[in-house]
Each structure stands twice: as C-alpha cells, then as structure tokens.
Length: 167
Length: 74
Image 1 (cartoon, each protein chain N blue to C red):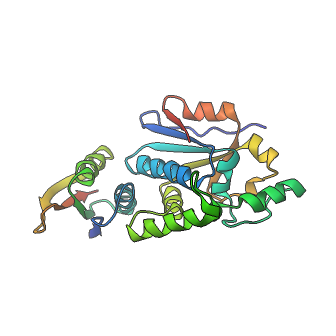
Image 2: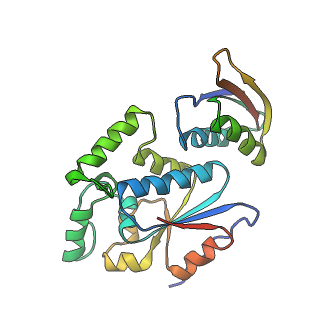
Image 3: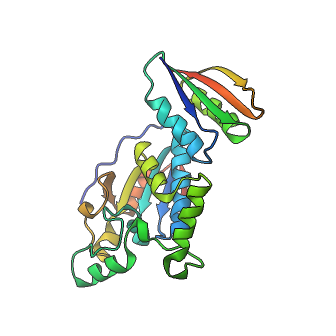
C-alpha cells in the first residue's frame, strides 16, 4: 500500500507524538501537548498505535468494534475515549469519573474537549496500520478526522526535522 | 469589526487554544480583544500572535490587578 505524504511547510515548527497508551491520564497529556503546540503555531502529528487507537474510535463507549470474534471482545473490554482507564488507582473505572468531575469543577479542559480542540486546530491524526490489523479495526471505525493509515516509514518521514514524543 | 474573548477563567492549554481558534475566524482588518491573566497567557498570547503574522496593537492592565486586555489585529 502506498500513502501520499502531505507536503509540509518546512518553515513551521513541528511536534509529532506517538500515542501508544489508551490510558485517560496519558491521553490527556497527548492532547494537552498537541492542542497547546497547535495553538502556538506548531504543525502537530499524532500517530495512534495499539491502545492509543481507542482514543480515536468513532464509538466513545464500550462497543464490539472490529472484525472477528476476538477483536470484538477486545473492543468491548477496551472501549473508546469515554471508557479509558487511568494508569494508576483506576478503582474499576471510578477514578476517570472523579477526574472528569475535578476537571470540570476547576475549569480545566476535559479529555473530550481537548480532542474536539485538536480537531478544530487541525492536528493531524494518523492510525497505525499494523495495530489496526491485529485489533481487526478499519479506518471507518475511527473519527472522520483521521487523515490516513500509516506505517513506521511514513511516520518517520512525517516527523522528520521536528520533535517526537512517545506517550 | 471588534471581537472579544475572555480567557481569564481558562487554564493551559485552553487559553491559547481559544485565542488561536478566535484568531482563525477573523477577517482582514478585524480586531480581537482578549482578556487574560498575568503569567503564561500574558507572556505567550501576544508573542505567538505576532509570530503568526497578527499585529498586537496594545496590552493594557484592566482595573482588576493581574487581568490584562490585549488587542490583536489581523
């Protein structure tokens, strides 16, 4: 499969993030950095792989997304953005609810608001082809904002001459 | 046309995010009046607006200490 790599502005500062984790707290870090950087003029790319793909699923809750029995089971257990667990002290999903409450109470953007902001700021979302095959996911399972499905070589080309983070 | 935006209740990164989104909606010659707090927003909003080709007309402290108004023109 060949992918058209977009022609990028060489004068622009660039941040590329590999979003590996599907944890609520780590995704909050991904989208805080991504939106903050985009807002101050960076070109921002996020490459979602493995558990990180949960963040860009069209279905936000637990749903049997995916092709085949095992991917569907995974889909239900992992869910989407709304069911992301926190990496420590998750307490069977109670902690993300507490975090969302605290964020709203303190007027800090929630994870969902950050994702919306990233879309509004035109942060580039890319999905990892290999992880999609393993998890039985297709591009149509993701948000329409997902620009393309890529492999390592294309991501390296995209992130060239910028800063790259793995979260 | 003059637009206004208050980000004094916002925190990082939404202070910059809201300004950036508001700036992107301006037409040529429009002015955005941003109300923001001292510290990171005051240091970064005018700087990044200038970097992105906007003109910062003024930065003035309001009657409330620590709250500023920045006028940005497209």
